[in-house]
Length: 167
Image 1 (cartoon, one colour):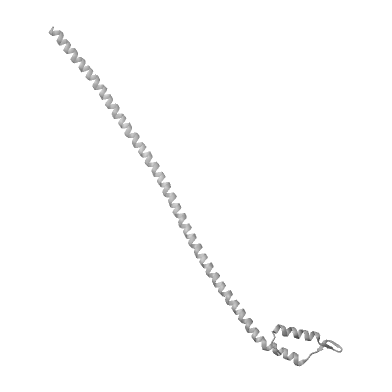
Image 2 (spheres, rainbow, N blue to C red):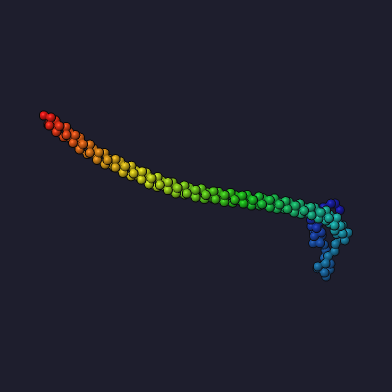
């Protein structure tokens, strides 16, 4: 028998059984050519190990491919998880830096307000003391002027009186 694929041989066997003559009084029994059927079965048995071997090779290749794909997927997942952790850590660092920055900004604004208030109070106090010193100086100048006028008038009056007494 020439070399055929197992499917072809099985199909031919099926056709033989279907086309076989039925036995009288036994519709479910038939007559087949024993040698031809045995040759076909021998051919199936001869080809079956090769077919099975090829099937096993295909299954092993598929399993190896699936295993490799699974390993690659696991590697990708691990890498993605690592990157996600790094991003979360970077985000946490960024948020902490942002919080600290806001805290420093708030402290700086508070300190600026305190310094502004202190400098305004100092300036107001310095101007008040200057005003008081100027007011005291003005008062002294007025008093001195009044005394000077009084002294000048007294000298003029004395000089006029001396002039009158000399005449």
